[in-house]
Image 1 (cartoon, rainbow, N blue to C red):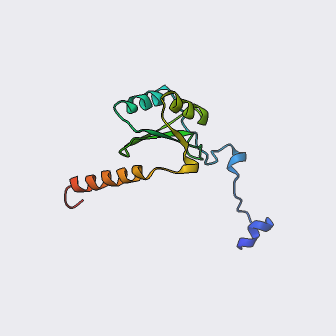
Image 2: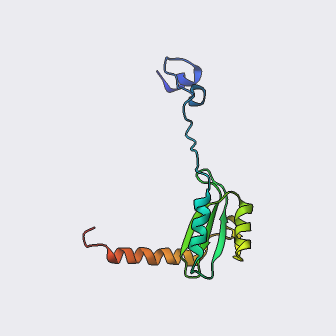
Image 3: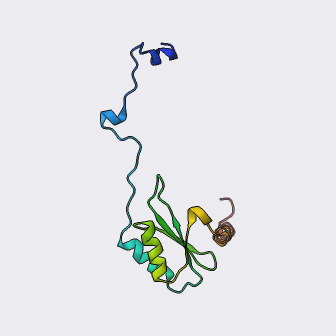
Length: 128
């Protein structure tokens, strides 16, 4: 069968339509935030200073997340119920918060990740 026969309706090969057949269409179900996420954020903040919050919008693969970055670049990210919740969380704890889609991710976080990777390379046994 020629490739153009598929468009004209000729031949016996038919492509199934997963949506009509009741199969999965490739979309995934994303885990929602829970109390454990909020507890992690509170626990992570203990003993850290110079922390800023970066609210990341919902994407195709994750819900709204709150990225907390400390003065030295150490960071954590957790799912949160909404953009408003994330800004409210930061406001209650007197942490400045920003929309990550507008301001981006801070350079100190990238520098921190580079330092961590370099340390891991130094600690890796030869030959790996």
